[in-house]
Image 1 (cartoon, helix red, strand yellow):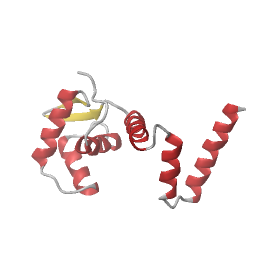
Image 2 (cartoon, one colour):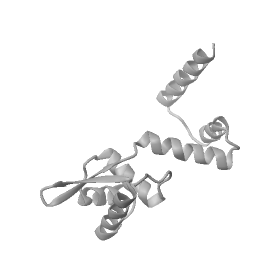
Image 3 (spheres, rainbow, N blue to C red):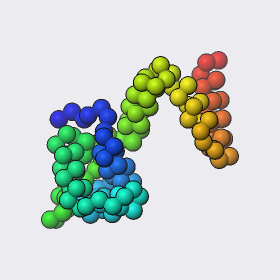
Length: 128
């Protein structure tokens, strides 16, 4: 089955857990969500993973009696789709306007500013 272009907020939370812990069990995903987000019941996580498997968002394998789950889309694929959607809906398709707005609401570290400068320099080099 084809992967949905944009995961729901609940699906995104599970994908984040799986990007950090590929091959995680339901218990592992449940623990990650409870640690990083908010408390959810184990059965809620199990049900969501089963639905995501049917949708093609996660793949499932067996490890003895336990199922292990991994994300089908990569983090960068999902991020690109989310950024594209947001830039189209709120910034008239301008990723640059979106980036400027995002940068204006944050206090970047020196390391992040250096990374941004390297990216800007690479963009300039491509246009020269």
